[in-house]
Length: 179
Image (cartoon, rainbow, N blue to C red):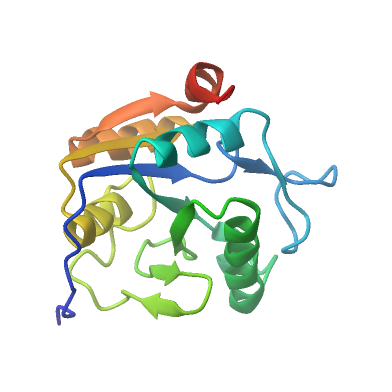
């Protein structure tokens, strides 16, 4: 499989956050966010992210987005959803998402662009609980310290497989959310 050229960013500390159930939830009564505006920040998440940003941590997000594969939202809508999250939480610099059940696809969304890593050697392992998205982010950022925050067993399993520190979302929001 062809490997893409990746520019490594040397960063000190890196906080990776899951999105759904960790920092955001639907505004509506739906189980999942159905369109970009159908999201709100979970209480405590904004303060926790602000705390880590204030002490110099770079912040990115990783999220499975099976709604695309299930036909519940388009890829374009999913990209706009991630960009809306970055408007609500501007300390999040990038969002990596896997839109397929097989874990073969991974896109990186910034406020201005979308990059795909679908031909990366980690293709096939991007969907959590596999560690592919975490390993990709680690390859790109080459962090000194790293922590992943999530709300589901799949998040913890991905962190364990990537050999990085994990913190449960509700504990993270309680600990740092009052910043």
